[in-house]
Length: 222
Image (cartoon, rainbow, N blue to C red; front, side, top):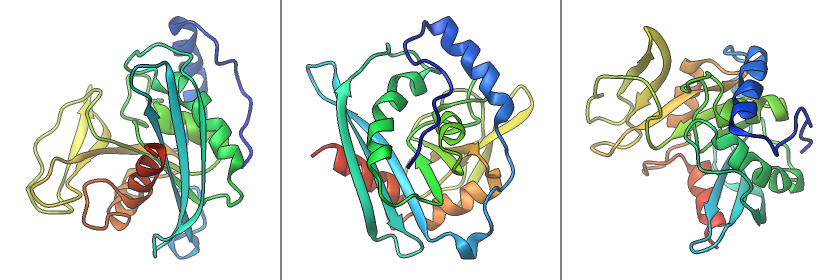
């Protein structure tokens, strides 16, 4: 997979925010792929941090769709080069993910990222950033809320409530497994919120996390 080189990664937090504000203008919140019947690969990406060190392992997996069987995978280990600052995770994790993504021999049609997309103070979270760099439709699928308010969805699988910030819908709070904490789903790039929620649910196999992210998480912990 080819990754665009659009900006430096060794930047200050203020410079990172300016990069987000600039690149968010390129984000598309409409579906940018041919159609569901032509999507046959879905990727998941995750970064696992090594306890007691400043190193982390980035993992990328590509699964078939809708079968969700492993097609390709890659990992890359490196030093964490950016501080832990909420809202700036893309500058901490994407430099680690890039080498793993570049090792993939199969380019996926859709990517699920363990992080926010549009549900972000700058409307440009990790999933959106990754989508702009790869040109591939991306979905933000986070386990916790960064910003916004919402009602609690019902306990049934597939239930959702919209996530709002300043009167704007920025994502959806989705129950991916009955009676289990929901996930925060938002558009990354080249995808609508409705389609993003649909794919997240279709990628769930009885667990809270969709299978592409579960597989990437397990691979990164090896």
